[in-house]
Length: 92
Image (cartoon, rainbow, N blue to C red):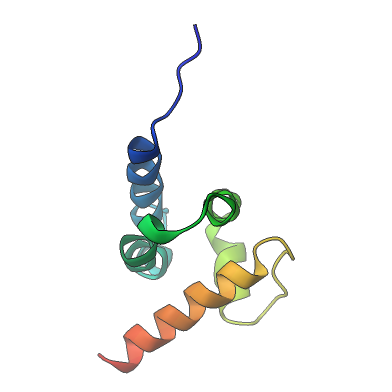
């Protein structure tokens, strides 16, 4: 028997993984973005976000801070997430 994940369960899991990364810094970058944007992503964008969630926090931070070039498959989405985080910081 194969269990399939509902769309609602998938989004809930992805939001949880966004808020519970392992480093507080990535929690604060990915969590708010996920809460604000995941519900509106296309299927392809959700797949890209799944790829991004599989990356380790150290790589993600280096990519967001421009210390290293991100993998091409996550670069557009990561740029959007980084800009969202910068905008949030400007408002604080």
